[in-house]
Amino acid sequence: MLAQEILLRAKKCVFTNKSAGALSKIRGDGLDFCEIRPYEAGDDIRKINFSASGKTGELQTNIFNENKQINVVICIMLSGSLHFGSQRLKSELIAEIIALLSCSSIRQHNQTKLVFFNQKQQYEYQLKHTGDVLNMIEKILAWDLLTIQSNFKSLDDYLLQQAKSMVFIIGDFYQQFDFSRIAHKHQANALMVRDKLEESPRFAAELDLVSASDNVSIEANMNKQLALKFNQKLQQLDDQLINQCMIHGINIGKLYTHDDAFIRLSQLLH
Image (cartoon, rainbow, N blue to C red):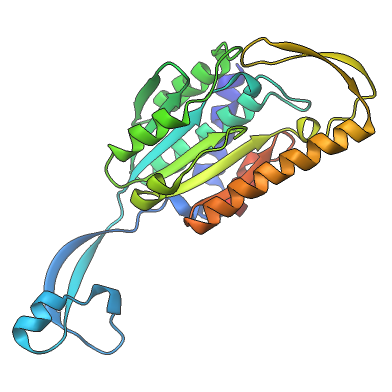
């Protein structure tokens, strides 16, 4: 029932909400070549054909027909840490993001693909209609995420083999990775899924902490000083990732488990 509710909410937002166009980053801006003609004032200088200009002795420009259909690849970085949430599980928020992005892409008649990555392999699915989207929502909700680790090397290798695409990389990004090669080929968006409690733990007790990725446990005396130190270290790592993405032209933003996913996505992708 939860999967169907998530899909119904997403369809209501994408197909009936007047502000659904705010998810504009999924709109195609691909171009098909049409002809070469003499350059005119106001033409985009980036489309000047210098080879033809050299042959004719005057500036020539390429003319294109708009092709609104593009390739959209939604990449989910699976990890054990997604099985956490004080408001709802991060995996549930990701299910809603999948629904919204997929429905929006399908609505715009894009070639839409969803890929799950973990440390062992990748799972690729073509999404052609909302029934496919429902299957993907059910899959992420049913996934046993404990002991799973993200594999960004596999993501890098996979995307370098794909045609130029609009790429959405979704996870909680607790691993550092160089996205420069991906950004060089694709129009990339990084969506960080987090819970406020994991960024700023508010415990004051001796705790047995168990890693969701490898089941390793440690004892910790959680107090305000330790919580602050953890928060500062995490913020430092997040700042490094955000700066790297900005350098390479990758759109990046956070969604929290208490957020309205549609509103937040609309803000990030506008």
